[in-house]
Each structure stands twice: as structure tokens, then as C-alpha cells.
Amino acid sequence: MNRFAISLLLPVFAAMPLHAADAGESVYTDLVLAACKTLVAPDPDEPGGDFMSARCPGLGDYAVIFKEGDLRQSLHYGYIKPSLVEHAFESFGQFNHMNPKIEWRVDAGGRPYAAIQRFFVGDAENQGQVLAISRVGQPDDAEGCLVGFVDALANKDANMLAREVADSVAPSFRCGEDSAEYHGARGPKAGDPMIFRGEDAR
Image (cartoon, rainbow, N blue to C red):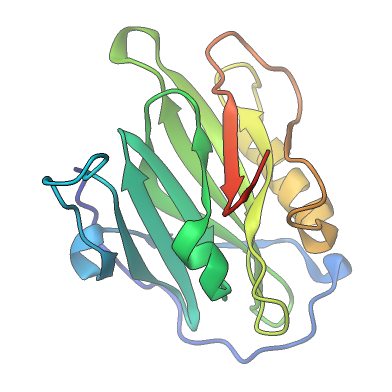
């Protein structure tokens, strides 16, 4: 199981109204399980007993929910309602693990509305890299989810494209209704999204 180190780079920001027009800044944090609070511990005596989940420091008051099971990882960011914390798992069908660096997109008041995380997808000999863009859950809705993907190997300016998706798609994305899609070119090593929201899976 990966072990990451957490490093908060910015102070707590006051909550301010979120507007897509205010988009345009990135701030970064690093994530490690050692700094997280365990929610569900692995149980080797149970089928699928390698599953675990944890609540981790994120950016200011915006936490990160980390989950891992069957060599796959899932992240939710910000204020997340209990049903999603307990049941949701958003990842890729292929085995995967993330880079611990989180890029947060923030508005003019410093409030994060999207997060970008690089995933390494597939086996070592045929490994892809995907930038996963997520909507950050807010105090008034507690809804966070994946909103889009960028194949980091197939797109020359993948980081810039991922920021564009974060700024234009994430603020108005309807979790549980809209579908997260790939943006830009998609090569053969890009992972297949696997999105579960409790009993609702798609």
C-alpha cells in the first residue's frame, strides 16, 4: 500500500461564492496516508479485506477522502456527504495508483472548486498516465465526483487541457447525472473509468 506525506501549502481560506469566471489559479498539496484518519481498516479475514478508506488533510477546511481496494485507488475532495464517503468508489477498471501531488483549482477568494490528480494506470510494462479532474464538494451541497479525464501521454499540453476542463466543466457538473468523459486525444493506454456511487453505478 502506498504511503504519502501530507504537506499543506496554504492557510485556511474563508468560504466565498463560487463563480467559474473567478477561475484561474492553481495551488498544490501533497498527500500521504500516514497523516490521515482511518475510516475503514483492512480486514484480511474477510473477502475483499484489502479495502481501506481514510479522511486526509487537504486544502484548508477541504479534506480528501482516500480509498483503496483490489489494487485500485479512489479520491473525493472537499465536503462529501456520508453516503458517498461510505459507498462511492471512482477509479479505473485497470489496476492503478496515484501521484501524491494534488493540483487544486481555486477562485479569486481562494476557494477550491476542482482538483486534478495524475493516475498511473495498468501494469508496469504497459502503463498509461491519466489526469483525473474532480469537482470539489462544497459546504452547501457536499457533492464531489470525477468530471473528466485527460490522457497525459496522448496530449502534448495535458496539464493545460486538464486545467481548462477543471475551469469550464467542474463548477457546473452535476454529480450523479452528468457523465465524466475524456477530453482531447485518447491513446490505447488510457484507463477505463469505473464510477460507483453507492447503489447507483455507471
